[in-house]
Length: 346
Ligand code: NAP
Ligand code: ZN
Image (cartoon, rainbow, N blue to C red; front, side, top):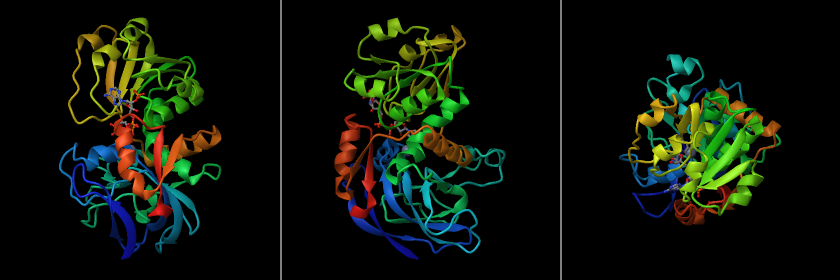
């Protein structure tokens, strides 16, 4: 067993504390990664607070992981010691179902094995990236391109792929009008990626507080959703809306801003159910959809796309002692735009 230092929570709204966790000895296809940076995703907060259902505590969150390979199993062929690698939201899947075979492991019929708070094939509860080391089988490890810094790579492994995948799937590109709701961790990546894909991008944020940033990230326009006139002005405008908001919003107001055949994709995952009036879909043949992270192949594509287009997240690097404060700031929408833990401070 490999002992790793980690930060864990013992229950909803409990502070993080120092701990040690055990990582399994390397199996044939396993890679041992010394973690250098771990991003803080709002999903970590939903999970740590038990909002999505019961959690086995103590919990070590973290699914935006970047580090260096320090050891490999006997049969590993994709990575060698010293490689710069990443791990995102999942660490395994059945590998045999239709979706796994298509490279859409996130939609595995048997359920993908999440990086933390899941039970893996060894019967162990998975623990995430707020820790110094992790062992992951090579098929779920990503290669980080040379020109992406490790601290910048971390948020791409969730915020990057979760926005890249629906933008890709629904064809964001030249001639397409894309709106991004919520300019947080996911939202700011959505703006940068959609802009790089060639789409015309609008940010819909609660206020105009971050307007300068949004325009700098590549948005063509920026509106405050607290202003009711916004929804009148934008009626029937967008081909695609990516909703990244972590809380319940009035979907009907946003659906009204979709053009004929437009789609509103929810990636934000609030615990409460959202409701909508089907009349808002029927009237303009609109769709309401969801999207979960992205497959491993697509995640590598996203990393290569970001490398090629010089796309990096805006990050604030924090020490391991600042995780509780960072959670408070994310909850207050006071994040610009992703907190990343420097694991050397652990
Ligand atoms: P985040 O950094 O907190 O960003 C969310 C943004 O939503 C905030 O910055 C804020 O933007 C806006 N917002 C927050 N509360 C709001 C409210 N009450 N009303 C309107 N807008 C509000 O969170 P994140 O890490 O980007 O994650 C966003 C959501 O995506 C979370 O629910 C997370 O669990 C989910 N997620 C889903 C997937 C997936 O695979 N589908 C993957 C990762 C994360 P403004 O200040 O600009 O309004
Ligand atoms: Zn995430």
